[in-house]
Image (cartoon, rainbow, N blue to C red; front, side, top):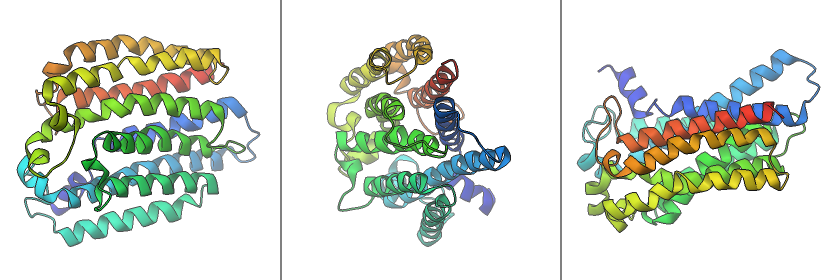
Length: 299
């Protein structure tokens, strides 16, 4: 593989598009809510795409940083990755991660201050996830919670904040973020089924390590279904438009994954680095955001 290919692999490109989509969905939701008078539509569209792409690069930076701190673990779990294989040095990876993090924060101010503030929270949370002495990854539910805050709260809030007049504390985006937070609080644990050996040896208290594969699968299965109950509650409370009930269609997908979770959690998915249940989790997360955004447009 070429050096450029190793750099792309280091950033783990598969999650990049979902993070961009998360940002764009936030933009759509806020735009449908506020319907602002945009003086220059081309400039607004540029900011929407630019800000959403920054979210993708923020995730890339966090992926690289996590692989630096997880190097000893990856030597056991994923020795073919660019860092443990020696194809990229720690210094090169650190420069890439630090440079990308700084670029994301600085460039986010070109969008607006609310967007920059939310993206800064994303950076802080993802750093605390990986770096000692905090090392939230080692702290069981705090590990999942930090992922849920970064990916389920910060990303849609950042997209929402791109729209003129929108605030990351608006009740609509808070409701969406709460739903996504609880989904990811459990479902994000799907990434850990493929890393049990190395995580256990280095004291990482992930759900599969702490509870065992069977019990962890049972616990996680509830998070593919239960959070959807929040959507009709938020609609009834006036926090979400009626159209967002469209997302309940995905309950069938969530129920299917929950039913098959035990088998999916131990079977590698062809073409992906992780298990089948992790792949389902990512695509279900993207679908939920798209369906909710579509629900705002139906309002």
